[in-house]
Amino acid sequence: MNEQTINPEITSDDKLWALLSYLFPVIAIIVLLMEDKKNRPFLKFHAVQAIAVTVVLVIIGTVTLGCGSILFLAMIYWGIKAYQGEYVTIPVVTDFIKKQGWV
View 1: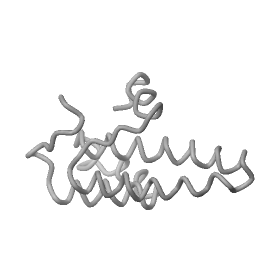
View 2: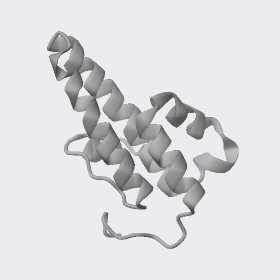
View 3: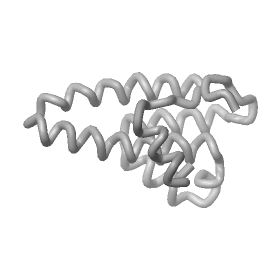
View 4: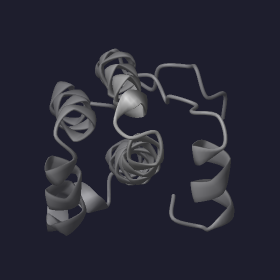
């Protein structure tokens, strides 16, 4: 499956939950706990990726004494791309979560 193609099975509800997962990572955890949402591949992909990238950005922000926190603006961009129905590829993070079998 091409990462950038738009899947017709993705609902507007899925897109909204994916966007919110990037903007508010706590929502991503809620998505993974909701029985009807966690079985949707698009939602699961974005929820897991949002959690993973949040952990990475928190570590970067801590190591750089807060200077790396500007990278959280990228999460807005990734959220918008998810809202457009696209599978977002984040360097290193996407490959890591796929190799771990989380998505």
